[in-house]
Image (cartoon, rainbow, N blue to C red; front, side):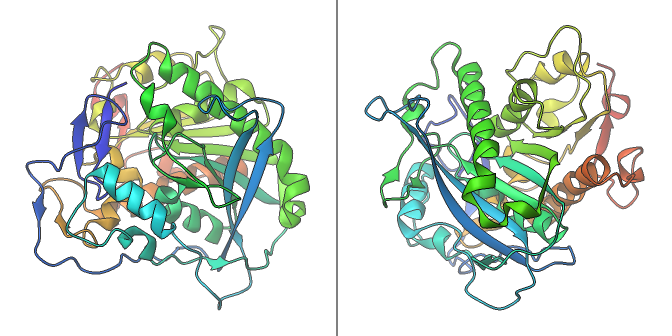
Amino acid sequence: MRHLLAAAAGLAVLAASACSAPTPPRSAVVSATPTGPATLPAPTGAHPVGSTVLYLKDTSRPDPWNLDVDARELKVTLWYPTGQRDGQRAPYMTPKESELAMRRYGIAGVPDDTLSKTRTNAIEDAEPTGRKLPLVVLSPGFTNPMSTLTSLAEDLASRGYVVAGIDHTYESYATTLSDGRVAECLACDSDTDPGFGTGLVQGRAADVSFVLDQLPSKWDGSDRIDRSKIAMAGQSIGGASAMAAMVKDSRVRAGIDMDGTTYARIPKSGFSRPFMFLGSAQHVPGGRDTSWDRDWKLLTGWKRWLVLPGAEHQSFTDGPLMAGALGITPVAGILPAARAAELTRTYVAAFLDQHLKSKRQPLLDKPSSRYPEVKLCPEACGQS
């Protein structure tokens, strides 16, 4: 599998495989003085945000990557509205997770625990509030931990959503399990195998269904969720997994793929649930990745295809927000980190508000003078 992988700072290099250890791009400039720990942008919604972690074990199936275990273990991070404004901030990741990620991303010259010092906005284990809240499942890109979508998750929670972010064990550089063990990327040994992408998204779809099954009994705040209003979004292979989960599980009513090549096969009769593609220039109609062209024709319900020509693969994650903390100057011409986060948050929330809260969003119907970086395809960027 071939994709753009960021060297933890949102600066992309073209890697031969999704988990090849990247080298810093030639156009990146390493500055002499890192700025110190990153601070995620403040959520834009009306609610303070709480966060907690669940550890789930699916004993009905073996782990697809670790042949020495007979159950699939998952770490699920929840973000949700709370009335609590004070308290301990939820950790971004552990020092050990930061160390392993930094090593695999090829980042040197800053302390190994730098990413773990990232300041979040959510209050750890705060009491949830609200009722009949829509649920959004998030899935990260291959090798990326779920924490790389924290900025988006916090923003959605502040807007009145419960967010369930899944760390798909052994598919990222580091995931801490319930007993303190740190699971590394066993799947990275197989990512050039034939059919890898198809198998991976099928496994993630099974993870999603299991999490939806377990939430009512495993989280005390689950009675606040409206289980008739569930959507899924993801970046890269996580976005491809949103499509796979929707095909497999009818509980997922709407989906968003952020810059991910798709693998799940849509029925030839078509697929009518709402779906949005949100991508970088590689995903223009007729571009290097043609999977969106293929699937677009089979989406028979509400659909949108949005492209940010100035974005790169990690622009839809927290990666670019870490550049200063890692002492790296972003590549010239790439969408600035703060603007990329704003655009991602804005368009993802607009889609979810329209399809889970029944609030029509004119932003999704035509080009916006406020967000001129976003092109509506196929019309604005060539016909598919």
